[in-house]
Amino acid sequence: MLSLNNVSKVFDAGTVNEKYAVKNLSATFAKGDFVTIIGANGAGKSSILNLIAGVYFPEEGKITLDGSDITRIPEFRRADRISRVFQDPMVGTASDMWLEENLALAYRRGKRRGLRWGITEKEREFFIEKLRPLGLGLEKRLSVKTGLLSGGQRQALTLLMASFNNPSLLLLDEHTAALDPGTAGKVLELTEQIVAENELTTLMVTHNMKDAIAYGNRLIMLSAGNILLDISGEEKQHLTVAELMQRFADLSGEELDNDELLLTS
Amino acid sequence: MGFSLGSFLRSCPGAIAQGIIYGIMAMGVIVSYRILNYSDLTVDSSLCTGGAVTATLITAGFSPGVSLLCALAAGLVAGTVTGLLHTALKIPAILSGILTQLALYSVNLRIMGKPNVTLLNTELLISLRNIPRAILIGGCFAISVIAAMYLFFGTEIGCSIRATGSNEKMARAQGINTSFGKVLALSVSNGITALSGGLIAQYQGYCDINMGRGAIVIALASIIIGEAVFSRIIETSKISFAVRLFSAVFGASIYYLVITAVLQAGLNTGDLKLFSAAVVAIVLSLPHLKAMKKGKVRNDAKSE
Image 1 (tube, rainbow over the protein chains, first blue to last red):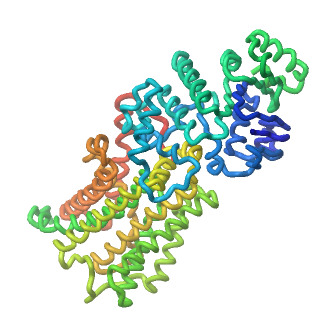
Image 2: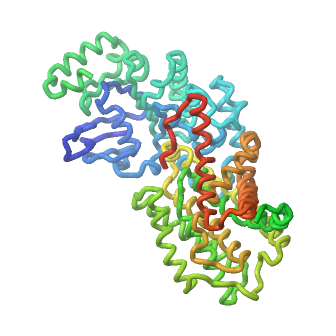
């Protein structure tokens, strides 16, 4: 279980550019939840994921994962429990390294890295077994540098890497935004499959309202660094894009004087 | 004073010996420059640190082997300092190296107690008094370094360092302590450089406080020449990294053969550094110039 308690993150504090990316946000996510997160540019979607992942720390508030306080634990030290897929397909893998080396790196997430050989024959077999169901033929290209793979292939690979070692939490930061629609659809399918197979608790940021509605069991809409809408269960199943936009307009209209810039962007 | 083929050929073995020993330094620089993507200027002084430690210890009666081990250790420490300046104190990469480089000048003077130490009438592991032997011993050292580095960068720690250099964000997301990786890599890089410095001091029979000035340029030239010659094998080989390391030693030998040739042709020794810098500048800019010619100008030149 992940919980954020009154979390705030401010950038450029004390300057004219001071901006709250996340403001007094509190939320709890249950084990097994698949939450989609939407919101306008600057609403704080990526900031929340970055706070949870430890890319930076909040000025205020507390973040706990499975009962332990992770608010100020360095990024690399919480990576054993939190795995990620990024928007930019270049970011998810080390492009100068072989496909199997990337998988081996992910396979050692959270384990002590010593002077043992970086990849074993047994792991190689395991990787082939895991790559085959992706249907991309990657199992035959273990010693290809990931820099030579396509964006979709890389995102699929990063997803597979993220599923290793049974993480407590999977963070997807607009991981299909840089792909063409066809590929994006395939990667989303794969996402659902991997999440279901491994029963991963997932937060997926997207700017596609249709995807936000179609995937997951809970939908959160952010505005000005806080939660504007939180829809789950039956209500989410029957949600439509038109309805979502209407509710967004209704709710945010009340705050228009505060957030005019954000809403018009 | 014209170019004489005969005297050039006579100086070839010496140039090759020198190239092999400096090639070991170039392999050290591969760790920072190629694996970590970090322009580390510490080498200009850590090379001399290695020489200073070796020369001083040999003069004090230690065996050349033990002296070299101590040189290696001193280099490891020097690299660690640069690494900590950069990771713990957040000083930019280039500046961290420059600071350590400057500080080491004083340290090197302290180690030697004077601006230069000569190694006369002592038992040395490698010396220009016996060039064939120097090539053999230098070659053994180079092969050992290649083997050790190849194995190290295949281990879990080695792979995590490579990931750190290739994609720091990804490395951290995979639970890699990238700061530790950088410090370790810079330490290893300067350790190998100092080992090379120790061999150079023995080979030339002295260590001078100015030894190593411009070493980074020699290293870069060696790396680039080697890569140019072996590019296809580096691309396709299963043991690509070992080939890359070997290519740097090869490149260093070519570099010294060229230097020997231009000196024989009448280039003033004092102008040598200008010549080296110009050659490296041209070679480094070649990819960009080629792209410009094709009309594809890239704006993503590495800033570090």
